[in-house]
Length: 500
Ligand code: ADP
Image (cartoon, rainbow, N blue to C red; front, top):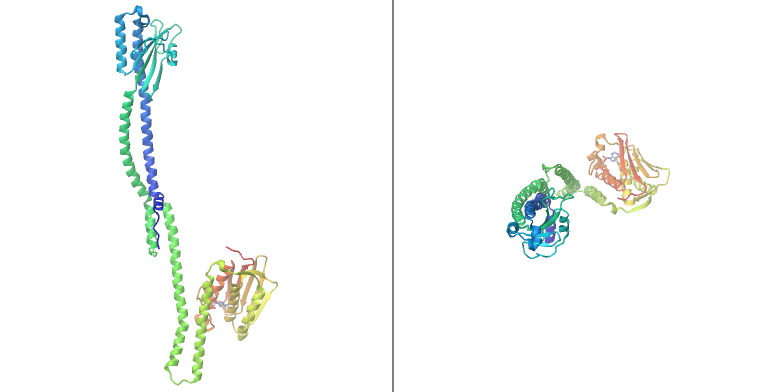
């Protein structure tokens, strides 16, 4: 039963989508610089606006300071007995206008730190000492911006007209007679900034929409070749494996497609081999069956046959059944070889004993053709092998050497070993194998001479089984043969079994 994927997993997988990631990256790349730029511009504007405002107001304050000096405002107003009403009113109107204009407050402090004039009318007569005021008495203009409380505070020295030097500075003879402490509102700057910000946000929102659309289209375009690969793979999975898939795109997708095509080709060839094998098996199994049917039919259709004929036909039928049995036994042996290496049952085996035992079993077969079977071995060979599979190797090779031999021929089996491998050589004085057939003798059901091989009971599976068994032991098999002279098989297998 197919289980539905949990919701959180779906979300997770979606987050892993390349398209989504590209979209997010492009979106961030498009939006972040815009936001940074807006912040930069607004902040820069604020700084510049404050600077400009300070410069303008300071200029005006300097003019007022000049007026204060020229009208002896400080000396007159510092001393209540000597106030000149007319000039004082003019200056106060000027100060009033200034503070109204900049929504601020102007305080005039005399040389004894006493507040002479406060446009708010709160601090008059009080003593006002602050760092900025003290600095200003030394002849220095100061300004301080306080954005939290929304004001700019500045001080302007009131320098006596005779000794006054260049703006903002003082020389040794200059006398700072008083200080103007002015604070003005930054509201105008803030409201301009707000307008700026609002416009920038609208622009940014528009930009986000455009960038999102561009990012979406771009992400889709970039991911398109990958989607095409996925579609092509899906088609192949659905069973359309006959053709190679073709997707033009990036070199990476081309590489994926090429590798996939190689896998497809391997699958196809595996499928072909399997089909061929099934066809061969069916054919091989059908042949004895067909013979059996012919024999049985002829017995059934003819009446009153002599007992000898019955016996002869029955014997033929038994030999066909034996043959069928042999093919099935060989097929089962081959299938067993297809299993994993782990299924090998490795033991330390005396190879000399194994070969002796097999030769003893096969000597009667050799005797039928008067074939001499010789075993040569200079040393005792102990090897880590699977006994059943190694027996199949030795018996198949020796049996072939006897089966495909001439009358009065010979078969020689030589067992040897070095410190790493043991070798088993099986030579015969037989028919030999034609050169063009040498490459095929390990194929399943391959026989050089079909009719001859059948006559002597070959199934065409013996060497396939032999090779498989040797490969499972990480060994190798080679053959040299001359037609009409004989054949020699050389098997080389590691003495110690190498797993993996
Ligand atoms: P079979 O069961 O027919 O012997 P094998 O797989 O053992 O099948 O051998 C494949 C074919 O290789 C045989 O049909 C035979 O023609 C050839 N062959 C194998 N061994 C020898 C040999 N020692 N001498 C000559 N021909 C051989």
